[in-house]
Image 1 (cartoon, rainbow, N blue to C red):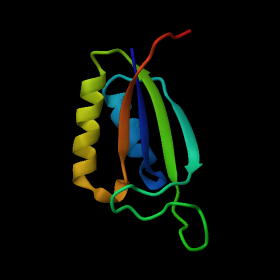
Image 2 (image 1 turned 90 degrees about the vertical axis):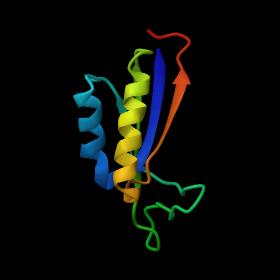
Image 3 (image 1 turned 120 degrees about the vertical axis):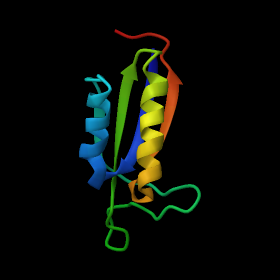
Image 4 (image 1 turned 90 degrees about the horizontal axis):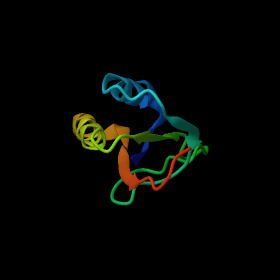
Length: 97
C-alpha cells in the first residue's frame, strides 16, 4: 500500500476530493487550515492579515496499483491551474490496521 500526502489551496478542496472519488478512492484524512509556503515561487498561505489564504492537506492510503493513477490525475489538475499550489508525495505504508 501507498500513502499519498496532498497539500493544496483550501479553495480547491472539492476538486481534490472529487478527483479521489472519481478514481474509486473513498478513504482519506483531511487537515484544514494548514499554513505553508511553496519552495519555488509560491506565496505564503499563513491565515494571517498579510497572507490570508490557507491550505488543506489530505492523506489517503491506496493500493499500490492506484497510486500512479492518482498522481497522474493530480499532475493534470496542477497543470490546469497553478493557483492550486498543489504538492503531492507518495510514501510506502509498512503496516496498516
